Image 1 (tube, rainbow, N blue to C red):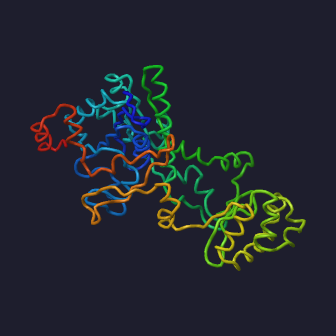
Image 2: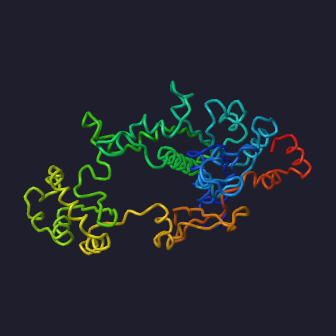
Image 3: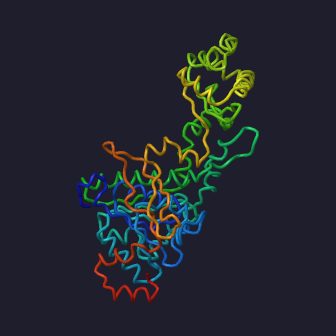
Length: 403
């Protein structure tokens, strides 16, 4: 790992991203966002599976693909060929991180397993992402976010009490696995500065899915049964959740008894509720939510959202609108923070495409989008030229279907 004073924490770190779909690419994008040079290795014809998922952008990309592949270069290689395998080994000699989510044993068959690459680069940090514990009886099972959401109990804690279990709106297990993997790789990079040695990091979707049950998971163990589902309401704080005003939904979070007093008197103008002994403390309000919440819902539904938000803010009660997804992305809040960027794109009508910016700020500066999500094979020539391949050799590799 070389250090470059560019303001990017991981400048000089090279990452080989051989992962596909979401968890692995997300973890690699995190490292890229923080300054690493991420080389994404894809099949020459089809590329990453997500290049064919969802809304098309240009000739080779989709919104799904672009959401997890900014700040990367795309190198196309047919890993079933010995020439491509040798190129990856050459790159691995001078790389810091290697990420893969092949089927169990798949990397080893290609000559790209941890022990095989450690032999040529003992400083390499190697991250294997799988569905289940790689040392257990389910090691060979493929991992899919939705399956794990079911198996890890996440669907059982999500949704309304009188409705069936519900998946999360995004692939939460994949995304958390990607973040956990990135944390582990950053820790290994830090340790390597002292030890000089790489590490083999093994991450499983089921493990990460179980971890994000968090307090609900521990409550289930302590209670000896599943906690009830409350939908958009809070399991132990009342009123705290999503409510309908006359012209749209809003979030109201009454966090303590003093706030409830102000809510009842100043926001909905119901001093009788504030004085009612059944609602004096949060524990009492929680116990008596069946009588309290319908009263509050009627009062809120009779008033406009703008008025309610003004009164709530004036009373010091955290609140906000429930925005549509596009509305949130185009909001002044998101715009002022620079969270949505427009990146050049040769194949769109406008010549640009929207790309979300990284969430991190260092010393007041947001980490930049240095590279738009790459077109398939966009970086192949540059990466291989850096290894000493001539134009003639590149043409031969293309003719043989290696790149």
